[in-house]
Figure 1 (cartoon, rainbow, N blue to C red):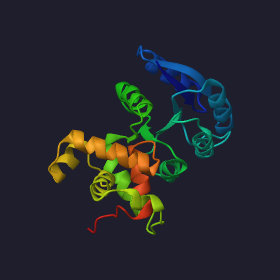
Figure 2 (cartoon, helix red, strand yellow):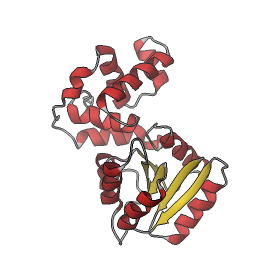
Figure 3 (cartoon, one colour):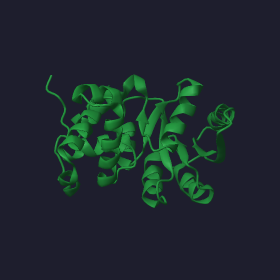
Length: 220
């Protein structure tokens, strides 16, 4: 059973998400909060696998809460899924930098929300598929100066190539085709790279790649 926490200042939104998620037998809503500070306390108490986090809340923003939840999490849990009405705004990029594992739009299909929660619970970060490459490109533009990281030297040339292609928005299958290897080989190399980099999921691996200059925005 995947344990989910809901954070949104609108009770009707939380109620709607609860109904949508608990319609799936493998998902259970274990807590709710209406502000960032409430969310931090609630997460410590309920220990969910995934937190569905709104970012614009008058009682305390979700970015600060995300940062505190990620900094204080025990092992791999929980992952933060930002649920937003905007696909390209400062809150989304702030959430990525704060350590969120993915985001999805509030007007998504109900099954997409459940799918996103499952992916994050499995350690597979994600963004809404309709805006994946645009979000990655915009994030890269906003991080023009690479930051040195000794972990980059731990990657093999193959692992470095795979992380770079992942940061360009490619799926495992697309990376496999580009490198003329099997998708299972890509998955294995990527898993080892993430362990070396201490990144929880694919999305935070992309953030790391642009921060350190392993990936750069293509010249248009």
